[in-house]
Amino acid sequence: MRIRLVSKLLTACLTSLMFSELAIAQPAQIIIARHAEKLDPYALCDMGVQRSQALAQQYLGRGASQSLFGTKGPDAILAIGLHPIETSTPAAQSWGMPVIAYTALPVKGEKGRAATVIENLRTQQAARDVLSEPLYDSKTVLMVWEHDHIAKAKLEREFPGEKVTLRQLLHLDQIAGVPDTWPDATYDYFWIIDYAPGNPVPVKFRMERQVFAPPFDSLPTNDWGEAEPNHITAGCLK
Image 1: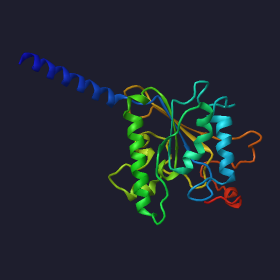
Image 2: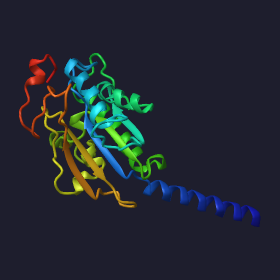
Image 3: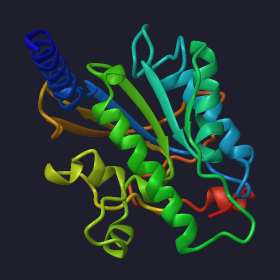
């Protein structure tokens, strides 16, 4: 009887310890990028493919000239849906690592609110994993995402009482200087978020603009929120 009691106490202590570790596990840094320009619901356009390659060669891949990761690379790459997966693949391949996909595939006849709800769910799952799984504790995580689910005030109002964007889910809404909407025409920025151990609210946020050197210097680059029609004239979807 006494042995059973001790065993139960040990189990309870271990369980409590595991949940405590889970609660405080969080990355040191999260880098968010929007997917590149798209051709249709399933693939990037030529400009988008070029941007995915430019991102790998200049910012995100092994040996990148202006690497955001240094020589060690990201510890994980997460992406939602087909466009973000295609955008992040060149960088992931350069590091010899997988893209962890939170799949939100386009389905024929599925549009409007139904599709949005699926993306809400995948975004919530990804944010929960990043901020709770010990796998990501003190790591650097790259998230390539669909821009409405990075930040969109209109979407957040559409689902009151529910966190549906990375801005909300990663607690960016609790610090100053974070835009409440990622503009439709803006592709050329990173959001870089730093966390301190044991603090789920970010301690630092900055936006970094993508400016590409040759042979990718013809890719559109515009200030945050300014019009950028080139991807439309190049045959890419709005």
